[in-house]
Amino acid sequence: MSKTVGGSPSFMGKRAATGGFDASGIDAEAWEVLEGQLEATIPNYDRVNTWMTFGQDKRWRRNVRNHATPGMNVLEVGCGPGSFAEDLVGMDLTCLDPSPEMLATAQPRVDSARAARGEGPAEYVQAIAENIPLPDDTFDMVFCLFSFRDFQDKAQGLREIYRVLKPGGQLVICDAGKANKLHGFFGYLWMNSVVQVMARIITKEKNHPWKGLAASYTHYGTNGYYRKMLKDVGFQGVQGRLLYPFGMASRFRGTKPENAVQQPTPLDS
Ligand SMILES: C[S@@+](CC[C@H](N)C(=O)[O-])C[C@H]1O[C@@H](n2cnc3c(N)ncnc32)[C@H](O)[C@@H]1O
Image (cartoon, rainbow, N blue to C red; front, side, top):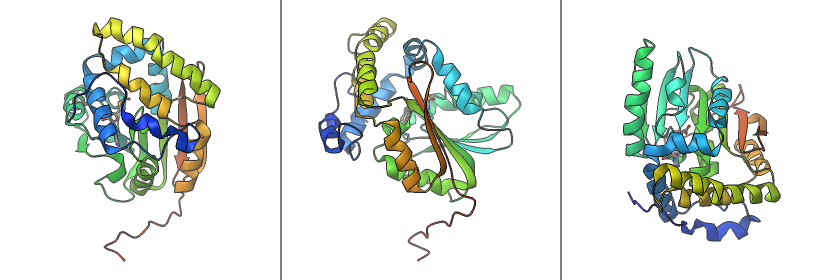
């Protein structure tokens, strides 16, 4: 995997094609660069997140976690180093991430938290959201915390999540907030100034990975854009709201209809 740390991946160039938001996707080469940058955040990931959100990341995670109840079968897509998954209590849990380094960090962290609560280990799957190697109609709940922004093909990722949800199951996404272009501009300023200073202080490195990660915010679409995408994929009861403070984060919810008919796979047809 590429280990480029600073700098902006080339996907920024495509933004104009969609009015400044969410180009058709992140191209493969740019995604490899992005993954290398995400992996390079591992040692400082939680600390920088807490600083750059004034500690609100913990409240947002709690807000999202409260959608699940003990006994559910839950999938976290893009589990990263396990910052969210470790606190899911009393659930059957599958953690999916394309990065072996992220999974190697998440596994001991999540499983030791589970063991301390008397729970068995979680399952770990190395894969991308766009191609989930798990059966249809499996999960009561799918969570995406700060990973949706990194999907190469967001509509395909949502289709795969829809497929693996049980009818009546729910998807909850939490990611950066962007109400409109103006709000996005303030977010851009924040990501490219204050966050950069914080990351530099914490990592003590001039060429820290948050330099490149700011680009993934610029590239990310608005709330309305993704609400429509969720509806187009087939989710019902779609909501997308900005979270306090300043709409720094957003939370999307959507439910797979109870009467959803699974699309036949090529082998069925
Ligand atoms: C910023 S971390 C989020 C970690 C964690 N969910 C949290 O609560 O902080 C983003 C994660 O998304 C993963 N990711 C990137 N592209 C992905 C894709 N196409 N499908 C699934 N996960 C992806 C990255 O490997 C990374 O571990």
